[in-house]
Amino acid sequence: MVIVQFAVIIGIYVFILFRVPQLRLAGGIVTAALLGGLSYYLLATDPEPRAEMRRIGIDEITLSDVDLDLGVRTSELSGRVVNGSENYDLTGVLLNVKLFDCPNSDSALSECYTIGEDSGEARVTVPPGQLRSFTASLLFIGLPEIIGEFRWTYDVTGIRALERRQ
Image (cartoon, rainbow, N blue to C red; front, side):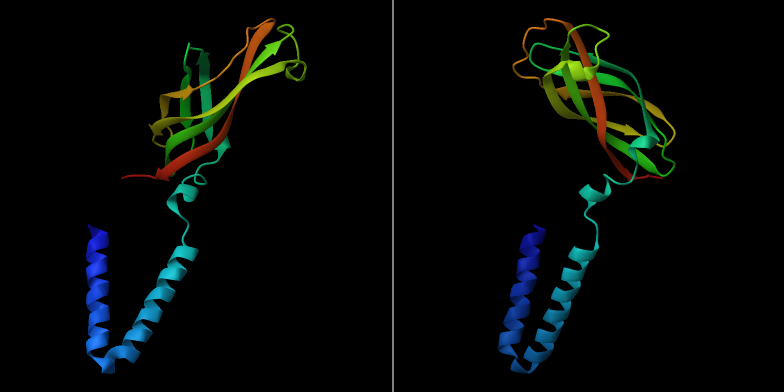
């Protein structure tokens, strides 16, 4: 609806400029100023999706009791997260999970075969200084049969956060 209103206003503006030749110079200057201001705004402001990824550092959150439940079709990584930020609401945790087939339980991960890897996001809202449970759905396709010891790791690859709502 806003686009239609914007198009009608632009149409009226162009119509007036064609009907009243004395306003063409002033109309051109106003148009150039508006386009310049819009260009500056689009180039100078940080888009919200990028900004929300930089508000909280990975070191400001704490994950605990993280568990992986391998399902037939999908898997779930679950646990608890604490938002250590003082100013922002945590809204999402981006995670990368790797599955390994290791010769034995004491093997270094460099000696293990990576048999699966997926990334997911736990969408959870955590106000500053609070703790919440989280769940992220993952999809591991074509997992082979485990011959040795099954092991897995996870890494936090990003954090989403929004301005604190009062």
